[in-house]
Length: 165
Image (cartoon, rainbow, N blue to C red; front, side, top):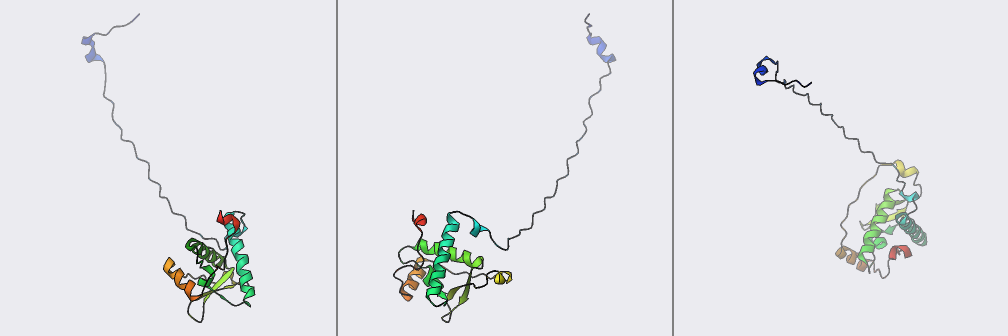
């Protein structure tokens, strides 16, 4: 049986408004940044991809050039400059810098004050030595200057067939 309420009964019903309780905000967690750690030796040479194939191919060529020149240091710009294609020059400089970083090649100043590259006879032994950074400008005009200076007709470092495609 339904019960009906009459408006005259409302004053007798005990209705209190709800109390609003402020919620506590969660404390913000402080995120600490991780310390950047660089590996001592990169594992890129052991990978079997296009990049490592190009690096290994260039390293073989440098060994051949170095031994053909009586183990004398190779002028850096003579090694990397390609008179027909500036982008190959840029790629050569990146690959050589990677080989230097991996301690497979050493760079030193020559008698003329220009950088020279030579094979590192003890890559494992010299790996603990302090690393240095050399920065140089590389543009088309500089490349043309060294092409004339070293009388470069053909590049010392050739591209592999897979690089040319």
